[in-house]
Image (cartoon, rainbow, N blue to C red; front, side):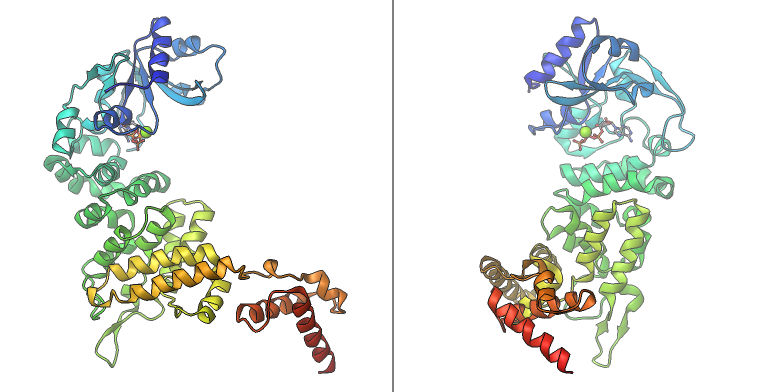
Length: 446
Ligand code: ATP
Ligand code: MG
């Protein structure tokens, strides 16, 4: 168990300035687990002014200095160095009212959330582990540092962080911590949307997302109340072996670890419960649910302050999640005009996850998806056009043929695109110009 050489050199640099410093938090946990850390956070037993002094002349960000954090460019990488601190009381359930620097790594570790995140490593690789983090890694459990209820009352985000680490590390949440989660759950509604979203994203991408989504439904539904009606909702339909919520959880688990796709799966059926009815066939139906789910998802994602690009992309996947083009060139050609190549490939993952989380006797539908994927690849390699920009003629060419500038140009380009997409003409300049001429003159005649 060793630190990388850059981190050792950084700790040595601080030591030369009379400051003892340690790698802390997630990096120590990851090293002990034999994983490559994402980044190395450093805790230093000093005051903010000592940090500034030690990094005079270095490129750095000082915006966090009030809370004791300096972000320094060290050997080509920005690294966060934070002065050891103990935290005061939390009256807003989010940020401590005061920050007190304490020059003690043990006290600094005490303010951290879970035992597995509350260890420090010095430059020789010696671990400070006052709360039994190593033992808990061995036992694969997430346990709060100190009294769990008090820690969740200080910062309710820690509830979702506990779920996030259970999902990404594949650990169970220790009993008294789990009990406190249940008690403190209502406090989650006070946590800012963007903080929840950061943790929820990591949770969804974890190896054990399914386990967490199924075990902590109440917490998930507290942050996304739109999911509540899905819990226990029987679909009354032979396609489904799960309730709406359990189907959703399995669908998240069945798709690639791509945030857009997993978020889309989490929200793809939230519109089902309000639309449910039993048809004359005696089965449950949810007509129009993709559109309603899309509309509801927009509300959820806005509340979580998701950026507009991600929101648009997730809503697009939800809207199209239940469209099932036949695995033929013609039908996939039409489909590609609506969703494009990238969209079509993502939607294949969405459809696959949706099928895999339904009744196994319908898994034969996966064959159609495989065939569709092959056709889509072939169409792309043949240079199939999905947009008027891919055509071998443009608006100016049409105007040169005498079409007046305006809406008619775009309309005719669209017409040419659908002729090409349905393979009635080839995407070749002469063929397109001939087709355009014919249409322009027939328009003049009519
Ligand atoms: P990752 O590898 O995903 O970055 P991490 O453990 O580094 O995981 P971060 O969210 O980057 O997690 O936080 C860094 C460290 O800061 C944590 O390991 C933990 O010690 C501490 N920490 C972060 N958020 C909180 C919090 N809300 N309450 C208490 N301690 C926290
Ligand atoms: Mg981190």
